[in-house]
Image (cartoon, rainbow, N blue to C red; front, top):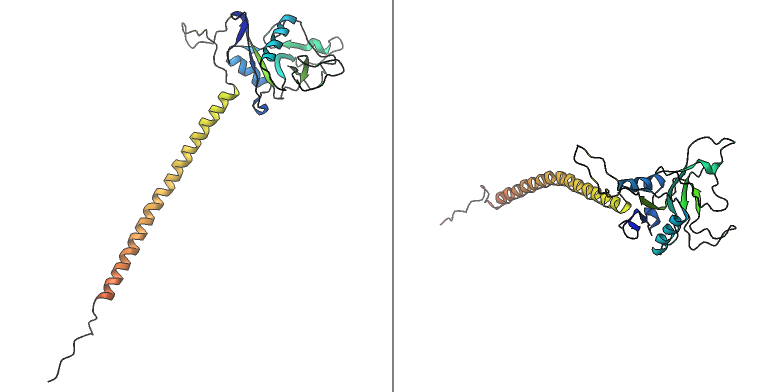
Length: 240
């Protein structure tokens, strides 16, 4: 889909990527790469108003259960006594915004480093109230939906030569595109298999035709010999 902007045209703009088929969802790094290929970043949520805006976008999708990656993750450094775990979380797009929307007992600060916006409409409320749209840390390898954010300035893709700048965002390699690539690879593999089969069948067919021809001529030759009268068979002379 197309990015959705504030008031229709105001940046930043957003794109909510939701997959009903859970097998097509992406881990944190895959989602981050998909956003960057489209000239965006995983979303940084810098205020309560922006949080509510993202919630509205997701609600409009009428999406079923499935969390959404946001661009918040914990820095890989040893936690000291003077550094609270929550302070180690930073936005991947470089935003310094300190707004957070953690659920009451999050982050857990164990092996879960990346952050999702919780979205499980069918789940009951927890001890701290409804989980819906609250943040919690998760393993970065988990497969989730995600939200991309297009910054205030339109991103420019790197050019190969002076004067060849591109100002339109590139097309992301999202899972539907990946499926097309896989299909093209499958067709290519099928073509190669067909060609290899032809290389085997063509010589085999020629050899078979030669064998049939030889057998046929041997059979004809033997039949002709049987039909010729024997040299010892002569008509008897009549004695008068």
